Amino acid sequence: MLEKMGKIITNKVINSQEVNCFDGKSKYVVRKLFKAYYSNPKQLPDNIIARIEREMKNFNLPAVNIRRGDRKKVNKEIEIYKGLGSSGNDAEDFLKQKIFMRCIADYISGMTDNYALNQYRRLYAIL
Image (tube, rainbow, N blue to C red; front, side, top):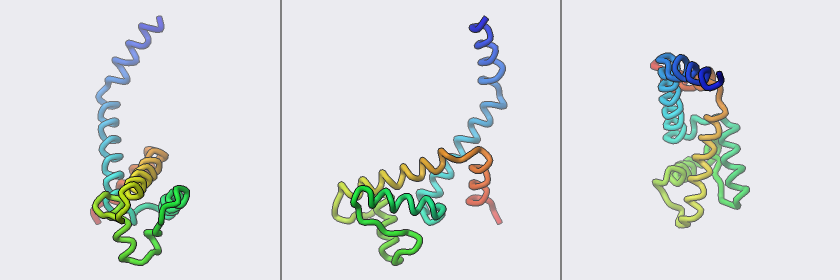
């Protein structure tokens, strides 16, 4: 009976067009959100920027607040986060990149479907 119910659920729900369309849209939105935050970290909310800075300090890494720091230092820091710049210490730079990407991923993974869609619209809606 359980096996039969499992097959019905798989065929009628999991493999349904509606569920698969929603899954496809969800993957697209998640990718676009990650891309937006990765390409311009200043779009992240203050609490996530503070978390990035806090994580850097936890690993005794020099941290620049990308919201309030000196413009040149902020731009250099963002380049390091993206793997496009260097501080001269490859190990530190790699750890900064890892922390940065993990904080973005954690932020997105904690979003509800509606919140993610609202963030997507806020970032990508044409005015």
